[in-house]
Amino acid sequence: MKKTILANTLLLVAGASLMFSACTDKFEDFNTDPKAPTPDQMKEDYASTASLINTMIPVMVLGQENDYQMIDQMIGYEYGRMTSAKNAWGSAQYYATYNPPVGWMGNCFDTNMPKMYTPFFMIRNITGSDGITYHWANLVRIFGTLRVSDCYGPLPFSKIGTGSDFAVAYDDMPELFDAMFAELDNAMAGLKAELSKEGAAATAKSLFGTADILYQGDLQKWLRLANTLKLRMAMRLVNVNPTLAKQKAEEAVASPDGLIDSGSNAAWSTFLPGGNSWHKTNILWDESRVSADITSYMNGYADPRLDKYAKPIADGSYNGLRSGIFNSSNTLVTTSLYSAPVVTQTSPLLCISGSESWFSRAEGALRGWNMGGTAKELYEQGVKVSMEERSATIGSYLDCTDGPADYVDSDPSHPERNIAAPSTIAPKYDEGASFDENLERIIVQKWLGNYPNGWETWADFRRTGYPKFFPVVDNRSTDGVTDARGVRRLPFPQSEFNTNEANVKAAQGYLGGPDNTATDLWWALKN
Image 1 (cartoon, rainbow, N blue to C red):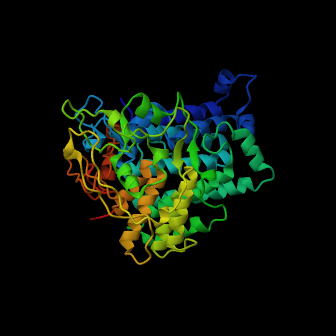
Image 2 (cartoon, one colour):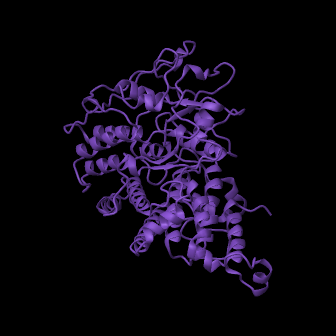
């Protein structure tokens, strides 16, 4: 009988548990190398848990080329309008035109759940749910869970691993966020307790330095990441539970452990097996170009970061590619006409930028929360940090009153793709402007500062309606996805219907609408 991805993960973990716990004397006699360290010795020197953490962290930013292509490139970068795909991959259905094949829509779940839970349960079994690596792994699990939930909505989380049945019940989204916040607080408290021990920080750097692809064993920076994740999760809830959103955001900002707030503590992944996957897909494989939305806004602003993000085309200008061009014989895209991203084989991959927390704090301040400054102050600091992080000279950017530029397609044979700017929003902060105008301003700069992390922008777009994007050129949705609102979520994966049918069908009832790409997530903007 075919098992679900989650069931297969739990089976792998069950086997791994036997290996590490030596459940019977015979098993131990048969399977233990007398020269190898015992499980207790491995626990003491972190040898096994370091390698497991190393396999788990890539769920936060996918480095392997196929995982990256099918999830980050096709979904996050596309729906966050960072890059635009010109490649239909031999199909009349793909994400950019809002009609991805059923077989693709489970990739985010089917790839990330095993990446999280196989090593997480092994670490839990080795450590007894205590110690540095357990709390660290739990933090990574929460980060990865938010990414997967941002795709589908309700997920198995709090009930995973609590029983013997491989069929796991889903949490509805309010339960899921409550559970994630609780586990996040536990993980941070556990890490802080471990780091308070004499010599623990230096020991962690020594033992985990090569295994940690984000911070080289600097667990104080992981605490910054944890607070930034809490702030990120809080912002999801502004429309549905503003009281909890305010509480958690203020907790994150007030924490003495700090936030990711500069380029020096931004999270960039060095997991580049075979080279940077963004470079492969965009440069070597020629599959995407910088989004026309990015170049429209940045051209209009004369943005100093533009040449850090995009390469000029033959005439020296920067011009991106419209999203959702169905690449058939009569619409074939000549990629040389559009700006390629600035990326090399050795460029690290962005997980969380140095500027994101400043813009989240600016939004919180705009909503009247205690974020440690005014909305204007925090917004302007976010722009400054982003410029510094990208080695751009800010100049008079914060006084710019120009809006995004109109878009003229670089291919003169397709004048139908020319389109007026989607917004008039300018970088200069206006304290006399409406709430909505300043919210748009903040979210636009958060988007530009997060380049090319499209996942967070897709979430912001769904909960706020900003940034304002061009409509896709060819909307082929059969679910009722509109040009104005875009894809709202992905349907639950077929793998879950194969053997976890009762639970995934129950989860469909949590959605408040059909299990398709047009139904809002619980926290998304309702309009």
